[in-house]
Length: 374
Image 1 (cartoon, one colour):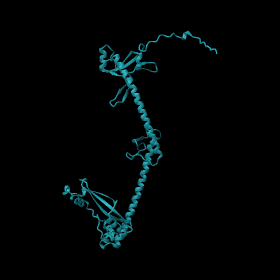
Image 2 (tube, helix red, strand yellow; image 1 turned 60 degrees about the vertical axis):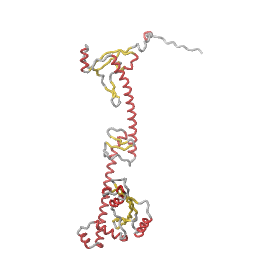
Image 3 (tube, helix red, strand yellow; image 1 turned 90 degrees about the vertical axis):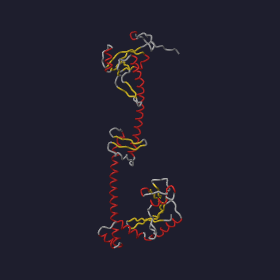
Protein backbone atom coordinates (compact mmCIF):
# COMPACT_ATOMS: atom_id res chain seq x y z
CA UNK A 1 0.00 0.00 0.00
CA UNK A 2 1.37 3.44 -0.89
CA UNK A 3 1.72 5.97 1.92
CA UNK A 4 -0.13 9.26 1.41
CA UNK A 5 1.89 12.36 2.12
CA UNK A 6 0.04 15.50 3.25
CA UNK A 7 1.72 18.76 2.38
CA UNK A 8 1.10 21.68 4.80
CA UNK A 9 1.88 25.18 3.43
CA UNK A 10 4.22 27.27 5.58
CA UNK A 11 3.62 30.94 6.30
CA UNK A 12 7.00 32.55 6.77
CA UNK A 13 5.59 35.51 8.68
CA UNK A 14 4.38 33.19 11.44
CA UNK A 15 7.44 31.05 11.73
CA UNK A 16 10.67 32.09 13.39
CA UNK A 17 13.85 30.21 13.09
CA UNK A 18 14.76 28.31 16.24
CA UNK A 19 17.43 29.96 18.30
CA UNK A 20 20.04 28.00 20.18
CA UNK A 21 18.90 27.36 23.81
CA UNK A 22 21.12 28.44 26.64
CA UNK A 23 21.78 26.12 29.54
CA UNK A 24 19.39 26.59 32.49
CA UNK A 25 22.15 27.98 34.65
CA UNK A 26 23.02 30.61 32.02
CA UNK A 27 19.47 31.90 31.53
CA UNK A 28 18.20 34.60 33.92
CA UNK A 29 14.86 36.14 34.82
CA UNK A 30 14.54 39.71 35.98
CA UNK A 31 12.24 39.86 39.01
CA UNK A 32 11.19 42.33 41.69
CA UNK A 33 12.44 42.03 45.24
CA UNK A 34 10.44 43.91 47.86
CA UNK A 35 11.51 44.16 51.50
CA UNK A 36 11.15 46.57 54.42
CA UNK A 37 13.69 48.57 56.38
CA UNK A 38 13.33 49.33 60.07
CA UNK A 39 14.14 52.80 61.35
CA UNK A 40 17.75 51.76 61.88
CA UNK A 41 17.75 50.29 58.40
CA UNK A 42 16.39 53.51 56.92
CA UNK A 43 19.14 55.48 58.63
CA UNK A 44 21.75 53.08 57.26
CA UNK A 45 20.21 53.43 53.79
CA UNK A 46 20.55 57.20 53.90
CA UNK A 47 24.15 56.94 55.12
CA UNK A 48 24.93 54.65 52.19
CA UNK A 49 23.33 57.03 49.68
CA UNK A 50 19.99 55.25 49.48
CA UNK A 51 16.51 56.77 49.54
CA UNK A 52 15.82 55.80 53.18
CA UNK A 53 12.27 54.58 52.44
CA UNK A 54 10.62 51.90 54.57
CA UNK A 55 9.51 49.81 51.58
CA UNK A 56 12.37 49.03 49.23
CA UNK A 57 11.90 47.63 45.74
CA UNK A 58 14.64 46.58 43.40
CA UNK A 59 15.11 44.34 40.40
CA UNK A 60 17.39 41.35 40.49
CA UNK A 61 18.38 38.73 37.94
CA UNK A 62 17.58 35.20 39.05
CA UNK A 63 19.40 32.30 37.33
CA UNK A 64 17.23 29.68 35.66
CA UNK A 65 18.26 27.03 38.15
CA UNK A 66 16.86 29.13 41.04
CA UNK A 67 13.45 29.95 39.58
CA UNK A 68 11.83 27.99 42.41
CA UNK A 69 12.55 31.11 44.47
CA UNK A 70 10.31 33.19 42.21
CA UNK A 71 6.54 33.62 42.03
CA UNK A 72 4.66 34.98 39.01
CA UNK A 73 1.18 36.46 39.46
CA UNK A 74 -1.70 36.42 36.99
CA UNK A 75 -0.48 39.67 35.46
CA UNK A 76 2.87 38.13 34.64
CA UNK A 77 4.79 40.05 37.31
CA UNK A 78 7.67 38.00 38.71
CA UNK A 79 8.73 38.56 42.30
CA UNK A 80 11.26 37.01 44.61
CA UNK A 81 9.56 34.86 47.29
CA UNK A 82 9.81 37.36 50.11
CA UNK A 83 6.09 37.87 50.79
CA UNK A 84 4.32 36.18 52.41
CA UNK A 85 7.11 34.98 54.65
CA UNK A 86 7.08 31.98 56.96
CA UNK A 87 8.44 31.38 60.43
CA UNK A 88 8.62 28.49 62.91
CA UNK A 89 7.04 28.97 66.34
CA UNK A 90 8.64 27.47 69.50
CA UNK A 91 6.11 24.61 69.42
CA UNK A 92 7.26 23.65 65.92
CA UNK A 93 4.27 24.99 64.00
CA UNK A 94 4.95 26.98 60.84
CA UNK A 95 3.07 30.28 60.62
CA UNK A 96 2.43 32.50 57.61
CA UNK A 97 3.13 36.26 57.90
CA UNK A 98 1.62 38.43 55.20
CA UNK A 99 4.39 41.01 55.15
CA UNK A 100 7.82 41.34 53.55
CA UNK A 101 10.93 40.76 55.68
CA UNK A 102 12.29 43.60 57.81
CA UNK A 103 16.00 44.41 57.90
CA UNK A 104 18.06 46.69 60.13
CA UNK A 105 20.64 47.02 57.35
CA UNK A 106 20.10 47.06 53.60
CA UNK A 107 20.42 43.36 52.70
CA UNK A 108 22.81 41.94 50.16
CA UNK A 109 21.61 39.94 47.19
CA UNK A 110 22.75 36.72 48.87
CA UNK A 111 20.72 37.58 51.96
CA UNK A 112 17.61 38.12 49.82
CA UNK A 113 18.16 34.80 48.08
CA UNK A 114 18.60 33.11 51.47
CA UNK A 115 15.35 34.64 52.72
CA UNK A 116 13.55 33.48 49.58
CA UNK A 117 15.03 29.98 49.95
CA UNK A 118 13.87 29.83 53.58
CA UNK A 119 10.36 30.89 52.55
CA UNK A 120 10.37 28.27 49.80
CA UNK A 121 11.22 25.48 52.25
CA UNK A 122 8.86 26.62 55.00
CA UNK A 123 6.05 27.20 52.50
CA UNK A 124 6.01 23.49 51.70
CA UNK A 125 6.02 22.64 55.40
CA UNK A 126 3.24 25.16 56.00
CA UNK A 127 0.94 23.66 53.38
CA UNK A 128 1.78 20.12 54.49
CA UNK A 129 0.85 21.20 58.02
CA UNK A 130 -2.41 22.69 56.74
CA UNK A 131 -3.13 19.46 54.90
CA UNK A 132 -2.60 17.49 58.11
CA UNK A 133 -4.88 19.88 60.00
CA UNK A 134 -7.49 19.58 57.27
CA UNK A 135 -7.41 15.78 57.49
CA UNK A 136 -7.68 15.98 61.27
CA UNK A 137 -10.55 18.46 60.94
CA UNK A 138 -12.32 16.17 58.48
CA UNK A 139 -11.88 13.23 60.83
CA UNK A 140 -13.28 15.26 63.73
CA UNK A 141 -16.18 16.36 61.52
CA UNK A 142 -16.97 12.72 60.74
CA UNK A 143 -16.85 11.82 64.43
CA UNK A 144 -19.12 14.73 65.34
CA UNK A 145 -21.57 13.79 62.60
CA UNK A 146 -21.68 10.16 63.77
CA UNK A 147 -22.14 11.14 67.44
CA UNK A 148 -24.86 13.62 66.48
CA UNK A 149 -26.73 11.13 64.33
CA UNK A 150 -26.60 8.46 67.03
CA UNK A 151 -27.79 10.93 69.66
CA UNK A 152 -30.69 12.23 67.58
CA UNK A 153 -31.76 8.68 66.72
CA UNK A 154 -31.46 7.16 70.21
CA UNK A 155 -34.05 8.85 72.46
CA UNK A 156 -32.45 7.33 75.57
CA UNK A 157 -29.17 9.20 75.19
CA UNK A 158 -28.52 12.34 77.22
CA UNK A 159 -25.98 15.14 77.12
CA UNK A 160 -23.69 15.74 80.09
CA UNK A 161 -25.44 17.54 82.95
CA UNK A 162 -22.49 19.75 83.88
CA UNK A 163 -22.70 22.31 82.51
CA UNK A 164 -26.44 21.95 81.84
CA UNK A 165 -27.38 21.79 78.16
CA UNK A 166 -28.68 25.02 76.64
CA UNK A 167 -30.46 25.53 73.29
CA UNK A 168 -27.12 26.68 71.84
CA UNK A 169 -24.46 24.57 73.55
CA UNK A 170 -24.07 21.16 75.15
CA UNK A 171 -21.39 18.58 75.90
CA UNK A 172 -21.56 14.91 74.92
CA UNK A 173 -19.53 12.08 76.43
CA UNK A 174 -17.68 10.13 73.71
CA UNK A 175 -14.87 7.60 73.55
CA UNK A 176 -12.54 10.54 72.81
CA UNK A 177 -13.77 12.49 75.86
CA UNK A 178 -16.13 15.46 76.22
CA UNK A 179 -17.30 16.84 72.88
CA UNK A 180 -18.78 20.33 72.60
CA UNK A 181 -21.68 20.94 70.22
CA UNK A 182 -22.46 24.54 69.27
CA UNK A 183 -25.54 25.40 67.24
CA UNK A 184 -23.91 28.56 65.87
CA UNK A 185 -20.72 26.88 64.64
CA UNK A 186 -21.67 23.30 63.81
CA UNK A 187 -23.15 22.09 60.55
CA UNK A 188 -25.61 19.43 59.52
CA UNK A 189 -26.98 17.11 62.19
CA UNK A 190 -24.48 18.41 64.75
CA UNK A 191 -26.25 21.78 64.71
CA UNK A 192 -29.47 20.16 65.97
CA UNK A 193 -27.84 18.41 68.94
CA UNK A 194 -27.92 21.30 71.50
CA UNK A 195 -31.63 22.03 71.01
CA UNK A 196 -32.57 18.35 71.29
CA UNK A 197 -30.29 17.84 74.30
CA UNK A 198 -31.86 20.87 76.01
CA UNK A 199 -35.37 19.57 75.25
CA UNK A 200 -34.56 16.16 76.77
CA UNK A 201 -32.89 17.84 79.75
CA UNK A 202 -36.00 19.91 80.48
CA UNK A 203 -38.27 16.90 79.97
CA UNK A 204 -36.19 14.90 82.45
CA UNK A 205 -36.39 17.76 84.94
CA UNK A 206 -40.19 17.86 84.66
CA UNK A 207 -40.42 14.08 85.04
CA UNK A 208 -38.07 14.18 88.05
CA UNK A 209 -40.14 16.91 89.71
CA UNK A 210 -43.27 14.89 89.10
CA UNK A 211 -41.69 11.76 90.60
CA UNK A 212 -40.44 13.72 93.59
CA UNK A 213 -43.89 15.20 94.11
CA UNK A 214 -45.49 11.77 93.96
CA UNK A 215 -42.85 10.28 96.27
CA UNK A 216 -43.29 13.10 98.76
CA UNK A 217 -47.06 12.61 98.70
CA UNK A 218 -46.60 8.87 99.22
CA UNK A 219 -44.27 9.43 102.17
CA UNK A 220 -46.58 11.98 103.75
CA UNK A 221 -49.50 9.60 103.37
CA UNK A 222 -47.43 6.76 104.89
CA UNK A 223 -46.39 9.01 107.76
CA UNK A 224 -50.00 9.91 108.46
CA UNK A 225 -50.91 6.23 108.33
CA UNK A 226 -48.15 5.45 110.85
CA UNK A 227 -49.32 8.24 113.14
CA UNK A 228 -52.90 6.93 112.99
CA UNK A 229 -51.75 3.35 113.63
CA UNK A 230 -49.60 4.44 116.59
CA UNK A 231 -52.43 6.52 118.04
CA UNK A 232 -54.77 3.52 117.92
CA UNK A 233 -52.15 1.24 119.47
CA UNK A 234 -51.43 3.69 122.31
CA UNK A 235 -55.14 4.13 122.91
CA UNK A 236 -55.63 0.39 123.41
CA UNK A 237 -52.25 -0.90 124.67
CA UNK A 238 -50.31 2.07 125.94
CA UNK A 239 -49.89 2.99 129.59
CA UNK A 240 -52.17 5.71 131.02
CA UNK A 241 -49.20 8.04 131.15
CA UNK A 242 -48.40 7.37 127.46
CA UNK A 243 -52.07 7.90 126.56
CA UNK A 244 -52.01 11.26 128.33
CA UNK A 245 -48.90 12.37 126.46
CA UNK A 246 -50.37 11.08 123.21
CA UNK A 247 -53.52 13.11 123.79
CA UNK A 248 -51.38 16.20 124.41
CA UNK A 249 -49.32 15.49 121.28
CA UNK A 250 -46.16 15.03 123.39
CA UNK A 251 -45.46 11.32 122.91
CA UNK A 252 -42.40 10.70 120.71
CA UNK A 253 -43.04 8.32 117.82
CA UNK A 254 -39.79 6.48 118.59
CA UNK A 255 -41.03 5.58 122.07
CA UNK A 256 -44.33 4.34 120.72
CA UNK A 257 -42.59 2.30 118.00
CA UNK A 258 -40.27 0.80 120.62
CA UNK A 259 -43.32 -0.35 122.57
CA UNK A 260 -44.92 -1.83 119.45
CA UNK A 261 -41.63 -3.59 118.73
CA UNK A 262 -41.55 -5.08 122.23
CA UNK A 263 -44.96 -6.59 121.55
CA UNK A 264 -44.05 -7.78 118.03
CA UNK A 265 -40.87 -9.49 119.21
CA UNK A 266 -42.30 -10.71 122.51
CA UNK A 267 -41.47 -14.38 121.68
CA UNK A 268 -37.79 -13.35 121.74
CA UNK A 269 -38.06 -11.52 125.06
CA UNK A 270 -35.45 -13.77 126.65
CA UNK A 271 -33.02 -13.57 123.75
CA UNK A 272 -30.10 -11.15 124.28
CA UNK A 273 -29.87 -8.24 121.86
CA UNK A 274 -26.83 -7.64 119.72
CA UNK A 275 -24.95 -4.86 121.53
CA UNK A 276 -23.31 -2.25 119.33
CA UNK A 277 -20.28 -1.52 121.48
CA UNK A 278 -17.77 -2.14 118.73
CA UNK A 279 -15.09 0.29 119.97
CA UNK A 280 -14.79 -1.35 123.38
CA UNK A 281 -15.05 -4.84 121.90
CA UNK A 282 -12.34 -4.21 119.31
CA UNK A 283 -10.10 -2.54 121.91
CA UNK A 284 -10.31 -5.63 124.11
CA UNK A 285 -9.51 -7.75 121.10
CA UNK A 286 -6.37 -5.90 119.94
CA UNK A 287 -5.03 -5.53 123.48
CA UNK A 288 -4.54 -9.29 123.49
CA UNK A 289 -1.54 -8.68 121.21
CA UNK A 290 1.68 -7.46 122.90
CA UNK A 291 2.33 -4.63 120.45
CA UNK A 292 -1.17 -3.24 121.12
CA UNK A 293 -1.44 -3.90 124.86
CA UNK A 294 -2.08 -0.18 125.49
CA UNK A 295 -4.33 0.41 122.50
CA UNK A 296 -7.20 2.86 122.86
CA UNK A 297 -9.98 2.54 120.26
CA UNK A 298 -12.57 5.32 120.28
CA UNK A 299 -15.88 5.28 118.40
CA UNK A 300 -14.35 7.72 115.89
CA UNK A 301 -11.53 5.24 115.27
CA UNK A 302 -13.94 2.41 114.56
CA UNK A 303 -14.89 1.29 111.03
CA UNK A 304 -17.72 -1.24 110.69
CA UNK A 305 -18.55 -3.21 107.56
CA UNK A 306 -22.02 -4.81 107.70
CA UNK A 307 -23.21 -7.49 105.27
CA UNK A 308 -25.19 -10.70 105.07
CA UNK A 309 -23.24 -13.71 106.32
CA UNK A 310 -21.83 -16.05 103.67
CA UNK A 311 -21.47 -18.95 106.11
CA UNK A 312 -22.72 -19.98 109.54
CA UNK A 313 -21.67 -22.27 112.36
CA UNK A 314 -23.97 -25.05 113.49
CA UNK A 315 -25.09 -23.04 116.52
CA UNK A 316 -25.74 -19.92 114.47
CA UNK A 317 -27.73 -21.87 111.91
CA UNK A 318 -29.80 -23.53 114.64
CA UNK A 319 -30.62 -20.15 116.21
CA UNK A 320 -31.73 -18.76 112.81
CA UNK A 321 -33.95 -21.78 112.18
CA UNK A 322 -35.47 -21.44 115.64
CA UNK A 323 -36.31 -17.77 114.97
CA UNK A 324 -37.99 -18.67 111.67
CA UNK A 325 -40.07 -21.31 113.38
CA UNK A 326 -41.20 -18.92 116.11
CA UNK A 327 -42.17 -16.06 113.75
CA UNK A 328 -43.10 -17.50 110.38
CA UNK A 329 -44.07 -14.07 109.01
CA UNK A 330 -40.70 -12.49 109.85
CA UNK A 331 -37.58 -12.24 107.73
CA UNK A 332 -34.56 -13.71 109.51
CA UNK A 333 -31.03 -12.94 108.29
CA UNK A 334 -27.66 -13.82 109.77
CA UNK A 335 -25.46 -10.70 109.57
CA UNK A 336 -21.72 -10.14 109.93
CA UNK A 337 -20.10 -7.01 111.35
CA UNK A 338 -16.40 -6.59 110.59
CA UNK A 339 -14.70 -4.20 113.02
CA UNK A 340 -11.54 -2.40 111.90
CA UNK A 341 -9.30 0.12 113.65
CA UNK A 342 -9.07 3.12 111.30
CA UNK A 343 -5.89 4.52 112.83
CA UNK A 344 -4.07 1.21 112.51
CA UNK A 345 -5.54 -0.76 109.61
CA UNK A 346 -2.78 -3.34 109.94
CA UNK A 347 -4.02 -4.24 113.43
CA UNK A 348 -6.12 -7.39 113.95
CA UNK A 349 -9.78 -7.12 112.99
CA UNK A 350 -12.81 -8.68 114.59
CA UNK A 351 -15.89 -10.17 112.92
CA UNK A 352 -19.08 -10.48 114.96
CA UNK A 353 -22.43 -12.02 114.04
CA UNK A 354 -25.98 -10.98 114.73
CA UNK A 355 -29.43 -12.35 113.87
CA UNK A 356 -31.53 -9.65 112.24
CA UNK A 357 -35.30 -10.20 112.47
CA UNK A 358 -37.60 -7.93 110.45
CA UNK A 359 -41.36 -7.94 110.88
CA UNK A 360 -44.12 -5.80 109.35
CA UNK A 361 -46.76 -4.58 111.77
CA UNK A 362 -49.36 -2.47 110.01
CA UNK A 363 -47.49 0.30 108.16
CA UNK A 364 -44.44 -0.12 110.40
CA UNK A 365 -41.33 -2.10 109.50
CA UNK A 366 -39.81 -3.26 112.79
CA UNK A 367 -36.24 -4.52 113.16
CA UNK A 368 -34.48 -6.23 116.04
CA UNK A 369 -31.02 -7.78 115.96
CA UNK A 370 -30.22 -10.49 118.45
CA UNK A 371 -26.91 -11.91 119.60
CA UNK A 372 -25.85 -15.31 118.35
CA UNK A 373 -22.99 -17.61 119.37
CA UNK A 374 -19.70 -16.14 118.10
